[in-house]
Structures are given as C-alpha cells and as structure tokens.
Image (cartoon, rainbow, N blue to C red; front, top):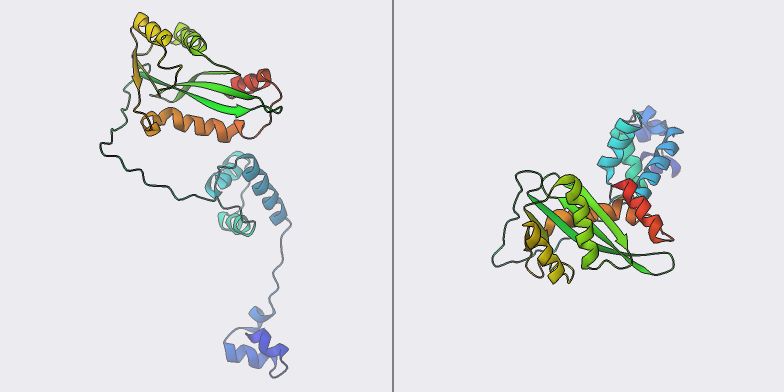
Length: 241
C-alpha cells in the first residue's frame, strides 16, 4: 500500500511509511534470490518425477539424510509449493460392510503367506502378468514370477521353489482367481499339508498385505519404465526384490 501511494505521486516515501506504519528499510527491501534455490528446485523436480508417490516429507528426509544437504525445511517447502509439486490426494470412498472381518496378524514367519497377480504391458502392447508372493509376518518378498501367461502349474512351481529354501507355510491367502481355486493347486496344498485361505469375493481388503505390496511394486519401478521383453522385466524385478 505504501508503494502504491508513492507511485501515485501524492506522498513521499517517508510520509507513506509513517502513514502505513512500516520502516523505510522494509519499504526499500529487495529480496536476493540465492543460486541454491535453482539447485533445490532441480532436486525436488527429479525426486517427484522418479518417485511419484513421495510427498514433501520423504523428499526432505532423502535430501537431508541421504544426500547430506543442510537446507532449511521451510525454505525447501516454500520452493516445493511454488513448483506445485503437492500430491493430488483422491478422496477415499467409504466402504460399507455388514460384517467386517479383521485382518489376521501373523505371529511368526511362515505362519501365513499371501499371493496375488498384477498386470502390465510391454512396449509392443502385449500384456504380461506378475505373480507376487510375500510373507505376511515381515512383508518379505519371497517370489516374483513374470511371463505372458502364468497358469496354475507356474504358481505351483514358484511355491515349490520357495519352500525348498524357506520351508512351507501353515497357510496361503489369495483371492478367488482361476489359478488359485484350480484342482492342481488344491491337490498340491493337500499333499504338503498347507491350508488355502480364499478371501470373500469383492473384498480385496482381506488380502491387504499383498495388495499394499503390489502398490509398492507399481510406484517404485513397474510404472517408471517401458520394457521391451519379458526377460528385461524379470531381470529388473529380480534386482528390485
């Protein structure tokens, strides 16, 4: 307001500062932008591009604790807001269930495993599937098998390979996909004395451990690259696991 009054030519700078109760130093202040601001902006843009599910908190901790930069968090957050890098959070729809069943918390490793499929496409448009298997106790990734088609035989083979080095679980949780309810998997489970637990249809929250793991797979690497072949996807997945 003081600057507007001075520009109108009606009052002097001293009179305007007295009228609006600001100091002459404040009136004449010109911000000096540091060259570090550009460096901070570059780091934030690269981080949010590569890790699209990271908010300001993770970006700040990464630059402070991993990269070793000592920039003030207020300064970094101001630049973060100016770049409009804030996460777009969708409002969650409330799920109404008549009889919600709490998710069972495992007490030790090999108490219960969870398995599920994911889908994606290669650069040439062909669809491929990912078979994910984790231990619910410590969320450890036990297997990630990738191919254009993964029938029940491939699921059984992947489970056998994990059991060879880790031992068998008491139960395996999955949805009601055709591979999981097939007679081959049922006979295999009976042979090994493993209990198959199928969630209720339309209730993926009952398989929340592996669903959350799928989200991590999608945001950490699967959604970042366009793969040319199944071998390339499997190699990247193996390194990530």
